[in-house]
Length: 143
Image (tube, rainbow, N blue to C red):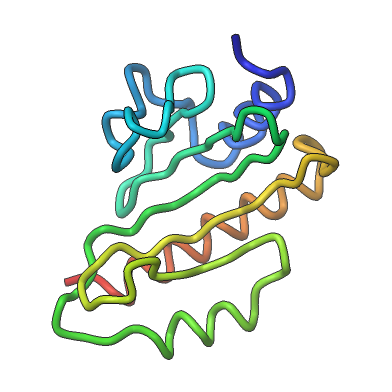
């Protein structure tokens, strides 16, 4: 059963990214089955240039909305771009290349703490910022 706070976060994200996709989102998440991800704690949203997920970390009350940019030019190093973008982001948003290798996915995330709100104007603002950053970065790094 979905946590009510996760349901509220999904509704907030749907206002920015559109209605969530139907089906098993964990199939698109690397290692989703191994991590115990299911429809109860992971959903996917329709975006064109990257994959967007919302996930709820059971037990901790923490969540994130994550844009995974997979079309990354394997011949260019985007470390400076990632660092520059990160400096301009509010603390709730992060950008990183977790594998730190050329051509590997770049992630932009909105992190929600266990005591943080999951609805309201502040959340909607951060989700819109995440979308703008992900749109910008996806265009900059495309192969």
